[in-house]
Amino acid sequence: MNIATKPPANAPDVVENLLKARWSCRSFKPDPLPQDIVERILTMSQHTASWCNSQPWKLVVTSGKATEELRQKMHGRGMTNEPDDSDFPYPREYRGVYQERRRESGFQLYDAVGIGHKDMPARTMQALENFNFFGAPHVAIIHTEEALGVYGAVDCGLYVSSFLIAAQSFGVATIAQAAVARQSQFLHKHFDIGDDRRIVCGISFGWPDESHPINKYRTSRAKLADVVDFRR
Ligand SMILES: Cc1cc2nc3c(=O)[nH]c(=O)nc-3n(C[C@H](O)[C@H](O)[C@H](O)COP(=O)(O)O)c2cc1C
Image (cartoon, rainbow, N blue to C red):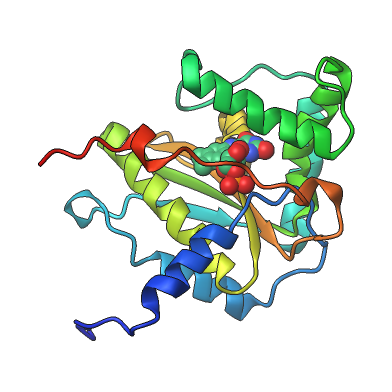
């Protein structure tokens, strides 16, 4: 194990660039990624920290026919309005600033593709694109150990972040998707994922279709003063 002590001088710029350049891609090119890039992203992500080094994340990663079959089944289930069967409860309520941020990012998305804010049928059709994985050639289904409870899910959240940034370093676009976990019971059966596991979310990934209008906006971020309480 290489125990590096001093990062290179440009490390903060490299990391900042990756963090700022990443965005949630909602239109992908269909071309599959080279397997060596996929494996490198996964290998890099293994360095994620976790409580007691439990590394509770496990993934199903699809390509080719496996993605197409999943896309067809999940989109079909979405179209017929199958009830939500998430392993984790969805947020109870978005209040105050959280509701404002949610609305702002939602309206940015609708504006980008010309969907009226009150056009519910068009909004529903756009939401169903989650189950098409936005055209991505690959999807990762991330699941955690049930007995680790909320901290297992936290560790998986860190893992997702590592994955997104590792992918970004190759120019590979990503989107984390809680929507995919809305079909958790189906995913348990489809991939033979045991009852001792809880599905956290999906990540669709591949090369971005940068010309698509849906990929042409970026979400805002709160100021430091809105989130940090410095005490001295
Ligand atoms: C855990 C998690 C779940 C998400 N689920 C979805 C989803 O189901 N569908 C979707 O379109 N975007 C989803 N997103 C993407 C967020 O909407 C996006 O990260 C946020 O609006 C900030 O935009 P950015 O990723 O482009 O910076 C999810 C993001 C995270 C971190």
